[in-house]
Image 1 (cartoon, rainbow, N blue to C red):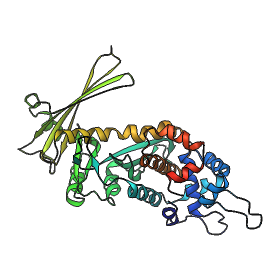
Image 2 (image 1 turned 30 degrees about the vertical axis):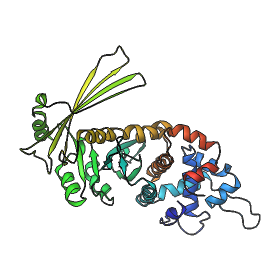
Image 3 (image 1 turned 60 degrees about the vertical axis):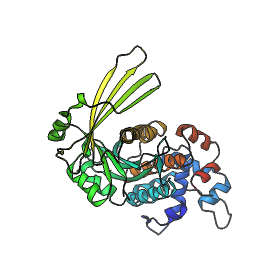
Image 4 (image 1 turned 90 degrees about the horizontal axis):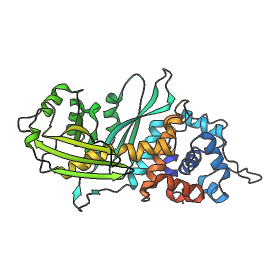
Length: 373
């Protein structure tokens, strides 16, 4: 981790710099891993760390008295306002990806293509000068639960224009990219298939009216249900069915060969009324390469990004209520949250909030999780 941070460009004026860049970033990462939500909390966490932790983090010592001189809140804040967030994201995602599993297996032990979800999230507490919330677009690995890449979506553009730049540096060879209807665009499909040698599973809605109409008109009533799932928990019950058909006449979309109809029936409580939502999707993978069980897993995996990443950042880290909003600081803090969540998932943690409480009781535990020992 320290080596990754040492390779980052330092945005500060070298005159008067007292704290090494890698030390500040490592200290901030350890503090966020222990639950810090603000620059004040980061400064307090570093200052309260025991001597052995400060030594590993590279905290500065007075050359004469040898007393520890941890950075204060303003030092951390000024760095994060100026730091190159593209470089920081690349360093963090590279570190996480290097420790992720190389394959993802299904529950029956059969190898399944790894899948990457592309999805955006607004940081409601942070705003551009125009007043709209800062928006981030991320590539999220279904199997490991790690963020593989992240970029910002400024107020003058939208997610569509950032889709290809986000995925440009990733190795997507033979992976399946999942995305919501916003990214069901011909240029994205062509980019994935012809440039990245990847595959896609894309949701189809009315923003592509011709495609939506053709998929919806398929003879779904004559197609049998090929996959069923049922979930129950937290007072909610959900049933999902999947129907798949090979479209021999072709769809008005590059490389699409299969269409899907997903029906979700949901009710709250045993006495509640069932609500049914029907969703359509397409893929370039033929039936012999993508059986219904795989398609259902990839679609469910895409929806899980909300629970496994966005929900954790919002609830555990109160991201939408964060008052960090100056310069590059909001995105940099989001990157450190991604790092903390990903590092914990790599250790096999299921309950992120519980793990953070455990780590917060002993600062030395952050060193093991971040591979700083």
